[in-house]
Length: 120
Image 1 (tube, rainbow, N blue to C red):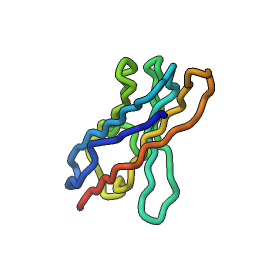
Image 2: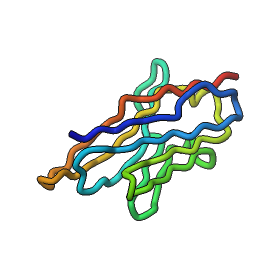
Image 3: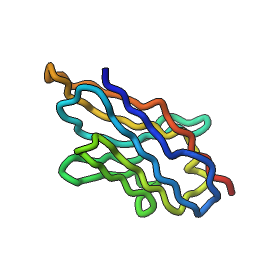
Image 4: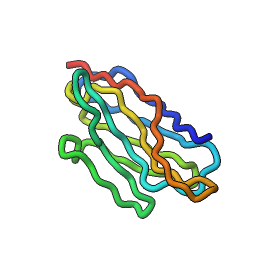
């Protein structure tokens, strides 16, 4: 059974930095893509950043220039480096991965979420 386990959330002051990690475990043939979503208080879940095995990435406009997503494909892990954090970045951050299993079936997986709180 595939699992995504996130770590690295917490409380930080505005202007500070945090680094989130998400590791996928289980029987995995390949992951493509892998990334992060977030859901703020009273808001819908939104895409933050996506990382591709090619090294490419895309970002929500609201985080461009402040957040960097990266992958370690050998470890089935994705990271989100968050700099210059703002109070509006406060949200539960969810790892997301599209995974191919041994039956060559694709399925979408989510982590349990990690809270990021930015104080003003």
